Image: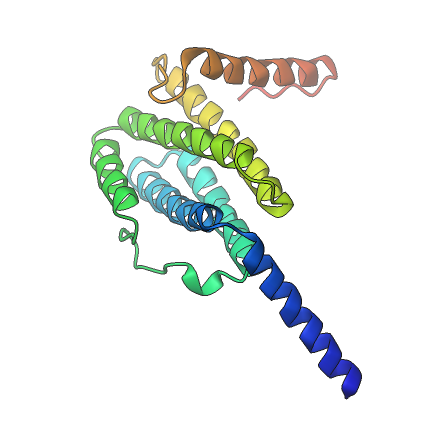
Amino acid sequence: MKKMFIMLLMVCAASALFAQTLTSSEKQSVLKKWQEEKMSHELYKLFAAKWEAPVFSNISASETMHMQHVKDLAITYNMENELSVETEGVFADKEVNKRYNEFKTSGEKSLVDALKAGAAIEESDILFLKKEIAGTTQAELKRTYRMLLQASQNHLRAFVRNMKQQGIVYTPVILDRQSFEQLMANRNKKQNQRCGRGSCCGN
């Protein structure tokens, strides 16, 4: 009984330590990322239903996993109760709410407009995550954000690839041209390496 009590105290102490190690800015970062992942998931699900484009259903499913990753992060730092759980299409963050409505309006015009909205969302995520990774020393934050960054880069490439199939050459609206072109070049380099090993993917 005494051992169980000591173990419980240790768990509580560890949870408190995690909570104390995040700065106010880092906590706001986690809460913001939760809202943004929710926005992405809901928009892509909506676009998947409207345009029947596999890219949206695939990435929407991915965003569901990303929401869980951010939730796990909040649990790790004893912040789970601070995650907002508004209904679909509603966001506690006014900026995210505004962006949701803007992307929804533009993405419902055409498939190409929906793909452009998706690309803009992922560009914004990439910029945000790079900034947050550089601004924290928390290992768990860095690990999760780096994973989300890689996913956002893949999503951006997928949207650009799908626009190319529609005859559209995408121009970045948030990232600078050099960063964007480097991101696209990295994707082509990796694909060429797979082709060289006899496992080339044609999509």
